[in-house]
Image (cartoon, rainbow, N blue to C red; front, side, top):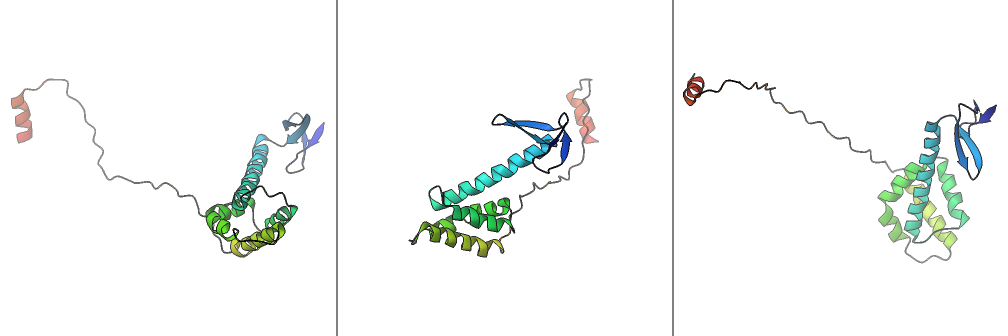
Length: 159
């Protein structure tokens, strides 16, 4: 029997598909890598909204925030938005401390800041560890089995 993948929508044989039980119901994915991809995307989305809640200082339940973020998602990804928010967290928090008429006005102001600044933002690439090459000759030391006297050592060094 064929089942539908939740991520890509392709039909996959039930025996070959990766099965996940959610709330008593089975959901299927083409393979475990696709399921891990879905979990990673969900984690980034949750982290983005958690960062937004930290910036506002409380959990924002107003649906206007979600609509504004969804408009930004047409152009930018959650990773990009999260990178901007974490880098400019103090700046945005300081700006949003002033008094607003309503929560909706505060959300619109926040969304305007994001729209105006995301275009100029560049994500920092993770630093790659540099490989330092040491210019040292390879020394292969072989231990002598025979004990030498002090005079023999002086003769070999003196040569």
